[in-house]
Length: 161
Image (cartoon, rainbow, N blue to C red):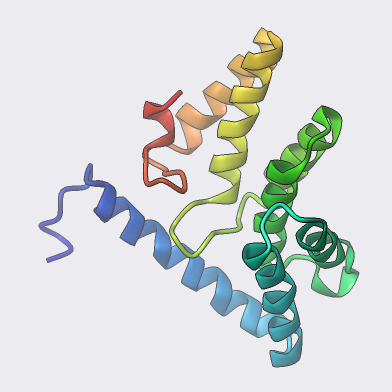
C-alpha cells in the first residue's frame, strides 16, 4: 500500500510527484477552455514529436509567448525544453531562469518538477562557467526546497550533482 511504500524509493517519489501534475492539470481546467487546453497540448506535442528541430522551437515559442496561455502548466515545461534546445549560452540561461522564476509550479507528467529541474540545470551551468556564488545559491535552494525530486531519467537531483 501507499503508506507502506519506501519513501526513498524512486517509484514512490515518481508516483508521489505525478499527483502534482494531475493537480496542476485540474487547475488549468478551471482557468482555460477545452479549446485552449487542446491548443496548448497540440503546440507542446509538436515539440515532443519533433525534438530539437526548428519546428519544435517555433511551436514552443508560440506557446510561451501567447498571453492567452499565460500561467498554464505546460509553459514552465516548454521554457525548460527551449533551454535544452538552445545552442546559445545566454539564451539557455535566460530560458532556465524564466522557467525557474515563472514556472516552478509546473510539472511534467512523469513527476519531474520544472522548478527543481531548472534549479538543477542552473547549478550545472554555473558550475561549468565557474560562477561559485550562483552555483552555491542554487545548490542551497535545491537542498532546501527540492530534496528527493527527480529528473527525467528517474534519478534524484541531489544525488547526481
